Amino acid sequence: MSKRGGIRLNLGCGVVLAPGFINVDKFFTLADLRRKEGIYGNAEVPDGAHFVQADLADLPFEDGVAEYVESIDCVEHQPFRDQPAALAEMYRVLRTGGKLALMTSSFDNLARLWLDNMTDGWKPEAYEELVQLLYGNQLGPGEFHCNPFNGWIMKHYLEGAGFRDFKITVYPHNSTERPPIQTQEWGPETLYIRSDMLWVEAVK
Image 1 (spheres, rainbow, N blue to C red):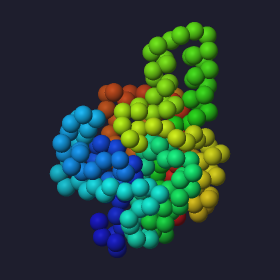
Image 2: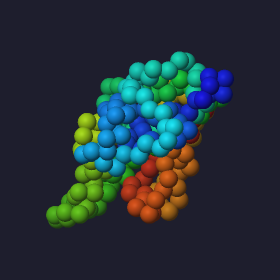
Image 3: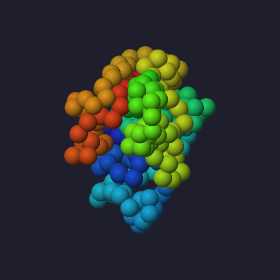
Image 4: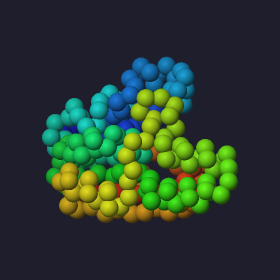
């Protein structure tokens, strides 16, 4: 992971670290993950996995050191006032020709799911599922959703950060197709997509 070859960053990694990446999250330490207690009980720290505790809006990396940046289900956790700085940091740390891959829920679809499921009676299972999709699982610091996205909002933030070469793909609710995520594996518990997902591929 030299500067010449470019490093790979997993931003907003959560409790499952990806091998071959520098995993970055703000709300816990590597020691927290290794203890595997409480909300970190499902933590996974593969041998040789790298971890840096840092704010996405203030990354501790030099300009142009990353060949690839991936951020999965993370930007919606960033306070909306900090979102321009976070996307600008992703742009800054990428080398010219480097790639950003980013995924988040489409708030347009979440709003439709709420209207379709919760306006004609009390449905406990639908309520719990939708509250987590809308507001985060709320199990600990950083596990709250702060910022909604649709294609137009994403385009605005990407262009504001400096990206001009990008594509936004929507993976529909209940789709069996999968975005080409490199930091996570799709297991039996994720056989379908819970809401429309925005998948961004951007080149600096």
